Image 1 (cartoon, rainbow, N blue to C red):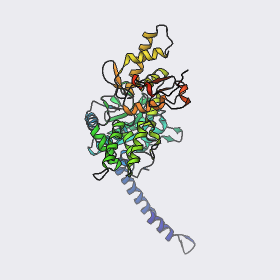
Image 2 (cartoon, rainbow, N blue to C red; image 1 turned 45 degrees about the vertical axis):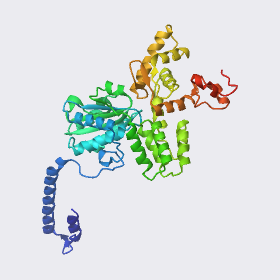
Image 3 (cartoon, rainbow, N blue to C red; image 1 turned 60 degrees about the horizontal axis):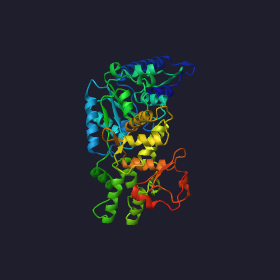
Image 4 (cartoon, one colour; image 1 turned 60 degrees about the vertical axis):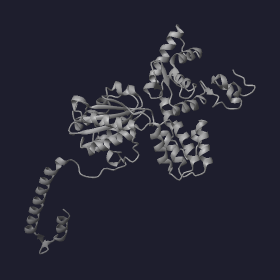
Length: 446
């Protein structure tokens, strides 16, 4: 077309300066018609391939722009990965749930699944979008629509979920990863995603901190991603901290102690290791361990907002009722790695008068048991027997941090008790019988 335009400009002339050159114009019109016909044929032939061009990589974090270098290979992640891949191959499965505690690596694993799914030719397209606590469904729709070359906005305003649903049905094989779902959502009504009988080639992988979300949304299978074991945690820490064979033995000993405190949770291991990377003075490592031991993780130099406490706080803040939050805080008052007898929690809840009811013990027990289930499904408590639960070490440290700072109900232990007058505001302080000598002298309670 550029050549044709140049020819027009070059031959703009008049015959004898009096009349247009009709012969030239006739020839030019035939050329233009021929080019138009050729273009129509090309568009018809290649239009079936869909839009051609480059997407803005900042507009949508699709699998194409994700790297797997942060993928932590562990026994748990390998098992979870294989389960998900096998489910993606199964024509009878259309929605898969991946759940686990905040910061365990669900998002990273989901991205790795998406990356490998395209390499295995399981899907033509893979797209990932974040849902979050307060979903913005229009934003989610825009991200999905943009990836398939569909514009949600038109001259009349905004297209409906039904229109996106109809457009998505034209896609042959597509995987959508919905990351960080907190509440069950209706994929068709809220977003416009065809699922099940609506589209057999369409699959959804969702990640959540709450097992209950997977169950309500009828995911199959429901895959749990567990924490790293001791060896895996140590390897990850050494890699991120840059420890090698030439490192000081005393530093390695402290590193092992720090790793144990992180309890196999990548979101705690990575920031700590990164903060300590390059530090060759043993005293710096000792201070880091003391701060971790003293529940002052946020004071460690270079540990930013991505640390475990911030991640876990999001899960805690999402708990809806005071009973569940209080049960969570009460669990932190038991010794580290202690298997907590649920009936003990019932007695404490009754003693603190957390439930205003006619039949105190019976009703409190029901309330506590319901709260325990909520906490287990949120990954904040671990199941260890029929009537016992356990708290992850890092989760317990976070809970103690929260417990000692809340205004409505403030708990503490000997380890977290401030050595000043502020302990007067505490609702409860936990200590074992052999720790009574450690209490501050002249201590008074409300």
